[in-house]
Length: 358
Image (cartoon, rainbow, N blue to C red; front, side):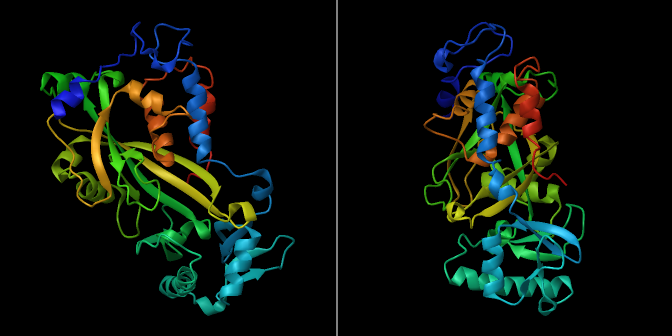
């Protein structure tokens, strides 16, 4: 039962001398709930989604339109695109070639969107582009710039354009859960007394099947505000009614990363995933239980701070989806759960925003 599930877990406190020794015995400071190794583990998890090899970084070709930098591609991806359609062309007017759209692509957002879509559909039908979502992302220089064109979500990393998403930390007061009570006026709760709702991804998902995940996360599509998207995703993915989301949600900044990835990455034809994730915290009522509505989630559970800490270990056997780690780590830092006196604190803070964040 839910109550048994929750009571089976212990509440973790920031200044507690009782440490769960499943982390090991390397904790030199009894006032902290975590061992020093957690800092290295967090850095590992950030770098897992934030890694562009030196040789790739220095070979990337800019994707531009009318002088506006929109994306980054490898030379082999540029060759693939230009050989697939005359809509894409390489400009060699400078020492450094750039990928751009030809005049055949049109000059308006709508024309460019249709032209680029035709090429991406060719690549999809050829089996080169997978994971088609029928969801359009805006392509722009900055988050608040008008889109130059729209692109199918699955194709965004092929052009190395900036992708945006929303990730929500679903929080519940552990003391309130255990006592079956919820004091809405208690704003001084230590972050370590709160548990985090986690979702287990469906085993039928094409990416990271069966992995743990945020209670709610999603891409930021064209035509929606961030908050409208958060409310929509909360309802669709976890059955959180809009009134609960709107009452408990708090924007909490953003993290960013750049990663070289894809099935052809070792042949030099990988893609550039350039991502900005807007972070939100939502404090949920103690008697609320998420419901999987869209078939993408198998089940939900809550984790204590120690559970989250264990999952940072590279050898942990039930890991979280990789791009969720930076958002959770960001929460641990800004909530005060991680002491700023801890070694590598500033290195972790810097790594959380080491991608393009605009």
